[in-house]
Image (cartoon, rainbow, N blue to C red):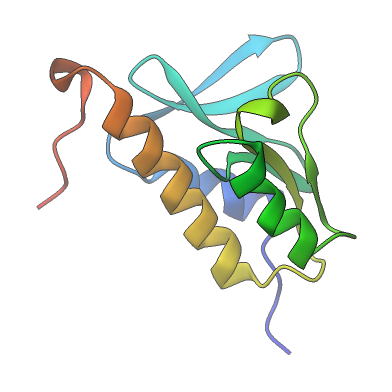
Length: 119
C-alpha cells in the first residue's frame, strides 16, 4: 500500500504552486498564500481549503466524507472545509481540492497580483 500524504507533503505541494508562499498570520498557524490571499490552511494532519463558492457547494464534500471533512470555524459559511489526511478522502482527491482552492483564489486576485504559470 502506498504511503499516504503527510503534513510535510501537503506543505510542499501547496508551496510548489506558482506564486505560493508560506505565512504565519496567527502564532503557530501556517497558511499557504498566493498574492495576499490564503488558499490553504496547513495543519499537521489536516488542510483547510475553499471547497465551494458557498456553504451548499462545500457541504457536498462533507456529505461524501462525513468522518473526514467538516465545515471550518469562522469561514465555513463562505465554502471552506477542513479535510483530514490519511482518512477516507483519497490523496489524489486532496491534491485536486488544493488545486481547485488555489485556482479559485488566483481567479479573484487583481490581474497584477496573479502569478504567471511556470513554463
